[in-house]
Image (cartoon, rainbow, N blue to C red; front, side, top):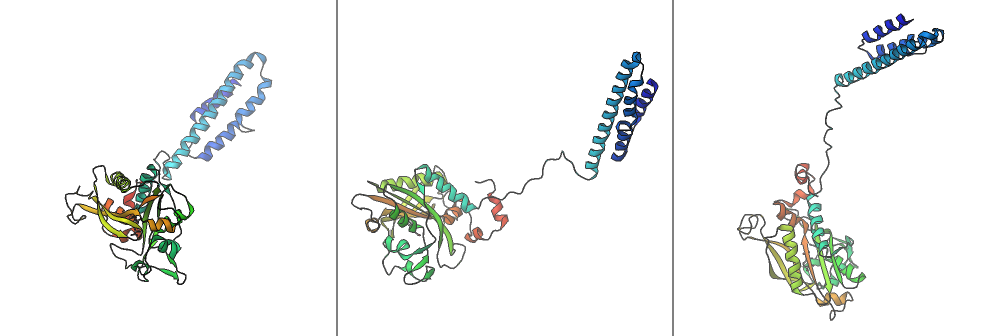
Length: 339
Ligand code: DAH
């Protein structure tokens, strides 16, 4: 009996296989229900008492050896299969090809973040608007050229329903639904009937800002815009305000920043002036406050509006606005890693 065990031990130790099936057959032949080791266990009751201890130890040793052998051979052969099928489970995972944010979204989010730090909320309004919210409530005279068919996409005439030509319409929406103090910015899409070129598109994006409270002054406007410009373009940035005209602000100004690409020295982006125009602004015209039921004797405010495409072009030195709308991944891919 003990000899039998020794022979089986030798058989186990010497067993080799190059196919998983052979290992499985070996397992069945040794450890299966009718296997050689299993039947030895069945004979245990016939072993004389004085040999039981030695027999028990040996047969348990044999069983452990056989199990180890089976497991060792199986895992070796399985990993061989992995390699031979070209699969290497230790190889690093392939990169997931993640998309990236659109440059206009990156810059919009950055602008929103800057103004949120100053306590501005974010408001939205509809893209399809009426004449009141886009023009009349903002003090546009009846014959103002912006109302012209050549600029505005009309959906219906009399009463006029149109695609908003600027996000200033959200000012009207906010003023009619909120009491001062109001401090909000409104990002969104706007539409103008313009020929598409490197510098213009019929659909583009703006961010409008509005601040109404007691004693809001032109100095508040300047300081807010200086903070904004320095956060967006860098802390050395300077601003300058040039007098301008908008129907809804008085006084009005256009704001330039020192060119962030040449640091104000002059380059082809700033046309060798050292300055780049980034937005329009002004003190909210008292007529606008009164049209929207805000008492212009009690409250003053400032407003500003900027084109996101323009700011993005200046920030990244992009020369053609059409790139934003063509979905060319070679262009979009360059903004990977930005948020
Ligand atoms: N709505 C103007 C435009 O589309 C931009 C603008 C200028 C907005 C001055 C303002 C402002 O709020 O005060 O060109």
